[in-house]
Length: 187
Image 1 (cartoon, rainbow, N blue to C red):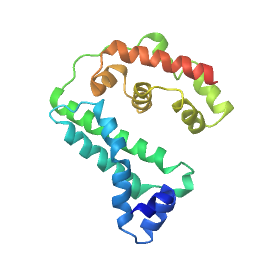
Image 2 (image 1 turned 135 degrees about the vertical axis):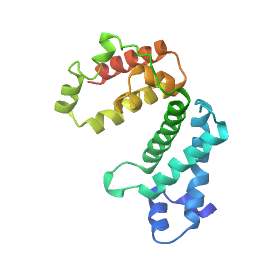
Image 3 (image 1 turned 90 degrees about the vertical axis):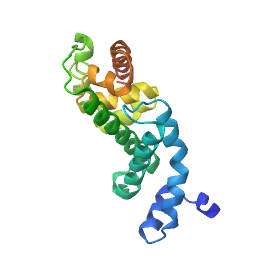
């Protein structure tokens, strides 16, 4: 397996799809520390850290299985996205089962509600594709801000995001404000 370190992830996936099964184990082990690091900052209602790690590894397995060379996205970025989405989905599902029905709703502040409506979206579309600006923004956002943005773009309101991430509503509102300011600077 030491000789596999000399190949890019993309080359390894090509070899895996050509039939070299040991490569899958290598990639799972290579990215397992990333999965564990993501799980340290998250909480799963009714589960423990090992359950979260298992969910993250499922996301990693899906990334290996579903990676598309034509997309142009590096495997590491795709794997990160798949792992995080799998974790968020597991956390959301656990929260839904534990806390259903959710009766409370606190609206976003007017400025945060207009994050994507305040002309930023139009500017993004006019200046460059959303995917490009999203990738650029990822370089400037903190880990929490990335999680908040991903969940916000999935259509979650800030109360839902707060519950998923186990954070106070105010810290999610603050994260949305920081994200908005960073998007303005980027544009």
